[in-house]
Image (tube, rainbow, N blue to C red; front, side, top):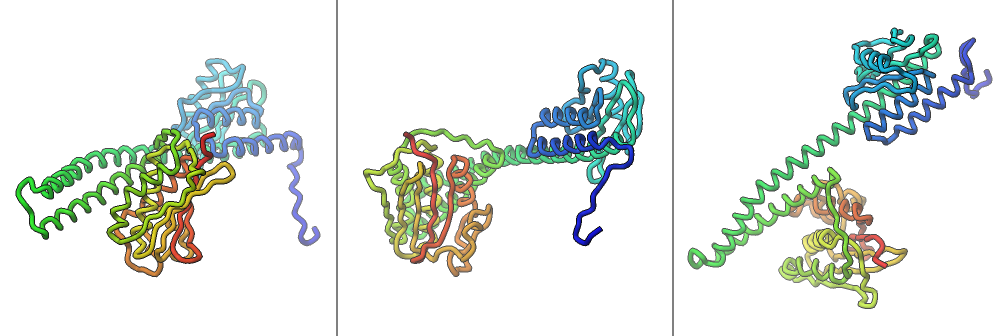
Length: 392
């Protein structure tokens, strides 16, 4: 054979080449049809349909604990044969072997994946029996079916783990909110002098207690939001709202924080282009407050600005600051969960959970938008929130 030429693989003597090609095409179709399918009933239907076609069987049964109750498939199979096939599929076995069925002969193929038996496939023929080529195809079919079932089981396990985590976080959040609310409430009562006037040092300590309780409350809310997003249970209620109104509400929230650092808060929205959006207002405000709070936190002097624009049926809001900016190459890393990256050349991390930006991006994408970060050429960081098409 000339160097560089691929070898030509020919079927064994006596093998029906047309049948072999057709069977391989069906196996490829099986791989395409099951890719990304996580519904157990749909996986079941595809596997049994393709198994019957690949093996040219009169009846097929599958057994796997990860799927719904096993069933026999194929028109013409009697009730006795269905029951017998299911019983055969449930038998323990680690090798391909011929079996007898009420209506003819069959072949049992263990479904093995990475050394683990996940179940079995039984194909039956009313006339004749499986030849060597059919046995080889049955083994290939069993290998592919086992991989599909393993993926389905993994998805089910991940779904269950996400559900358990959400339930745990929900319970934990509820249990934590009660004492946090009590801490905040008693702190406010003390600051109001309900048990007598406090001196300056005592008032300062009360204020610090309130601040720490506020951070803890935000952490609880962030964790609960993260659990809902992971489980796909975050609900969005869209309504029409003016862009400027959302920005105003977010700016009011961070104004005390900016004033304490003598930073200017600035909004650039053309009154004649104040877009009417159809979004979930509380979630958009949550994203804006996260972005503005971060900008104020990492900016020591100068300003924080919110700039708006639109085009191609989309609206964008950009929060810019005059802080040290993002470390080079960290434009995507800042959106990772529980990760805090020091601004500029700072080695010190600011207080926080590292969840605000991660949750903000996931909320934006769940609403059909996006959130991106970059460094400004003149210095500082810029976070761009892209919102879906505005209401017509």
